Image (cartoon, rainbow over all chains, first blue to last red; front, side, top):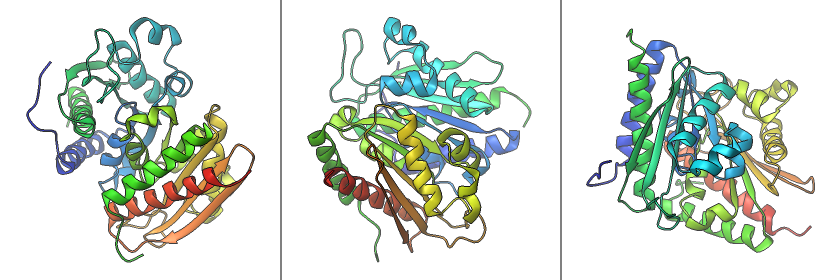
Length: 174
Length: 169
């Protein structure tokens, strides 16, 4: 867990989206996103880059538990056991969106953006970010951000873009 | 429209829509193409949004509009930026998000390159579909750059959704 000083800017997100886009292009991979707490911000950042339709197919905004279960096939028992904001649910979201959209890479975020929503053992700012490439177990990172609601969303979106980039690079090659 | 919407204007539209939805005890779903998730991001800036926003589909690729939202292939006769596609996206989102009372959808050519070749950059269709079967579609051509065209499309969609929520049965 780490606490960053200032939230990323829109320019930071766009730059990360550009780097990710270049890596996806180089591998001829396509990406899909599953966003809970970020609400669509990752998709927005990716589609700020002109030509992103070459590698970004879209995603699911799974803002409600209903959407996580029905649109992303996250098992109800997994949510009941670990809670919607948990590493297993983030991993299941990334795999769920990857498989539903039939792409090489899925990226997901679930978190508590605040200023409300803390639960026992889960503080405001807690986020789980996951990236899942086909044929490999998902990579999940846990962070606690300490910004305001929008800052936490930006920080989580940036982490997801960076984790997805690492996942593409881990595949080797280019 | 000469200038693109500002962030405060977008936030005001989000607040108005949220208030209208909660007043009717309605839940909203979204289907975004060119805006790529911007509308969902704006909606979820409000803490109370979990009471009235279920989530949505970002169907950035044409193929996914068909597979994920059930947009029939005939709808693409005039390309992926058309009133037929916008309406089918809204109806498709409403059908797939069963608890929702209202779905909004937007498809546009944000630029700088044309989406399918022959649509003018800035061409935007926003649509809403209600559980009672009613749907509204509006067409605009925005003259801005890519980020501003996305913001203008988002505002158009949010305002249309608000009108559809407050409209009498």
